[in-house]
Length: 253
Image 1 (cartoon, rainbow, N blue to C red):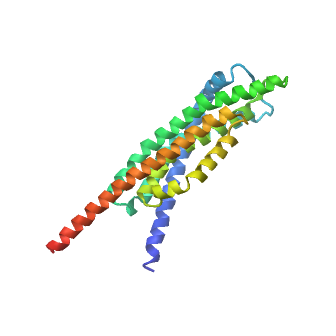
Image 2: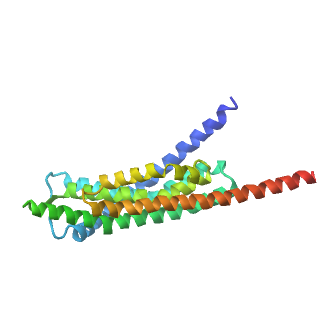
Image 3: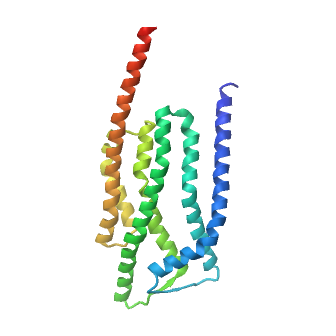
């Protein structure tokens, strides 16, 4: 019974934090809904101002509203999600690991926003111009369904933003000793292949577009290896220092 009690408390704590996250997400969703129209107008005027954007289904406007609201709510909730994740794993971390993990929250948010901006301002306009050029060559008019146009944009931008979290995820997993730089180097070729496949999936079949997406993803992976190596060396020094202190305390006893 004593062995089961800590697990029960652990699960109860997890449930409580998940509920808190969902409550915050629900509030953020309600707030985001009031600003969805402003975001829609900005995106339409910025990316699709030169094209005819129409609805093909009466429910398209409300779908776009909810889609934009969900994404905005997720962005607003991301720091809260990471904070509760940190609080959940904090009891199992050393004090220095707890402080380091807390720093990951603003870094992760910054990288996510950077990836979002990179996808929105650099990658998607290039993809859109390529597809429109291809349509012109085929003699097709640029009449976009609003639902498909925005869904396509989100399908390109959001995966890039999530992939920009790779250095932070690597840093965290290295800190809790789940991965090492040696593992990352060992799977480098497979990781490159996977990243190139992902880039090909979210871009049109055009070499420059694939390169524009593949290179940042590969650089992020290499940066993750460097970060993991730096953190591993630091952790080795910390372990050596703690062992030395424990040895000195043992001699005094």
